[in-house]
Figure 1: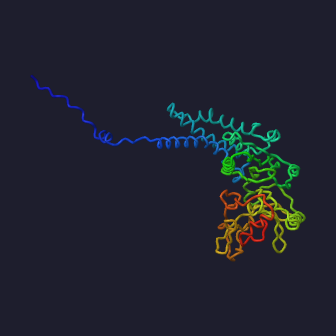
Figure 2: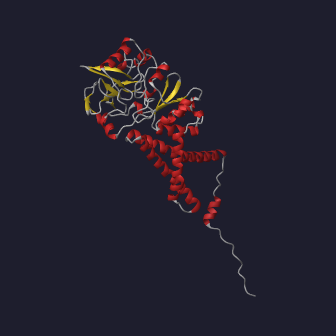
Figure 3: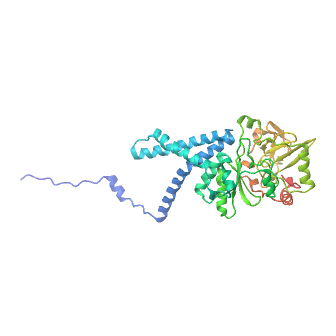
Length: 401
């Protein structure tokens, strides 16, 4: 009888044995919540990214590179189209094995961008407009502002636009001083560059998020009191890069004669009126008529740099800080010395050293949401600001900085 070799059982692989020997990770409720939260965060970023690219690119090209408004918006739309094409190509690759990027760009991403921009540029629902007049003036608002506010309405359908276009008579009717360079007036490009949003009756966290949204996207925001508490959002009129390099200001041509300067001085110091509002940034407490020896008369805002000599057109001065030991601080930030566009150097008024402007430049408070001067109270009385600025040695006795 032949010898039969019994079957030898398979020997498990050593890696399988080690893997089975490891303790299994226990799934906890906390771990599940974290994984779900992380997944939702990634989805939210993917959803929001095309909108951010569209609007932030547009404002950056318009304000920093001098692109015309429609061109800047078209460039922002083109980049958003690229983002959507990448999304679609990735999805197509996962589902079919082929990216088909050209097909996705032509038949999916491009129609989406065109339809979305067209909708936001032309439509403002009546529930999001305070009055029929505001709704009818919607298309007079700058296109980049229209896309931005309509995008926010997608996430906050209770947002209400309270004001767009104004005339000097409107300010008088509201009991407010006439703002000669209000961005609520149609600008040189034919569009209104400012809008007011309702804050009353809304949770404060919503108002804070709304203001943060517009600031993040490159717009200027001011929370102030006119006829009622509201959020003012504006997009300064753009200028070409050549004009910007020369330092010429964005504003339309503003007359400012010796008689205008005398009247401003008399209103401020003779009649004791409350501080005027800067025609550029809309701030109070920083803007007013000024004089320097021997006979220099001008008006200036030390928050945004708006400066206009008598019988001249306004310019944007540049902010500098010399970090010497004698340099003063006020309102929890270093004092800012504003210099004309073509000035390359000056003598420090505190220590006497020569200051190279290019090395001393800082960011304008108007452009820095975290600057301490952003928290200086607004729309206060003359007596309030006199008391406020007296808290710092260098600004004692001033009504505006």
